[in-house]
Image (cartoon, helix red, strand yellow):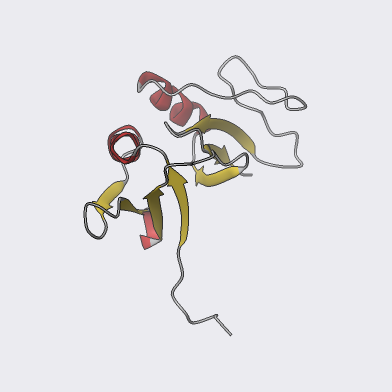
Length: 129
């Protein structure tokens, strides 16, 4: 039914200015203001052209699941670069991370490192294969 219909995902944040800086400056994504200033929204453009709607929400609750995954060729380089930009990596029970915060693949899944945006939403960098 919707196989040919354009779609996008979205998530909330509690501070649109902090989100604009984080996604634009720290992560290097194209960030555009969306709609009137009083609406409080951004559009992130990901590699390949996918767009993500980010909106301000006064009673924002951070997502407890990963909202964006960035697939990279070299996870060590990506983690090092993010660390240099002040990003701290999360460690979760049941996932043994190395000193950098990377959960290394055991052949059953990707190598992955989780981190949070300023609103507390979970993101990751991962390397498959």
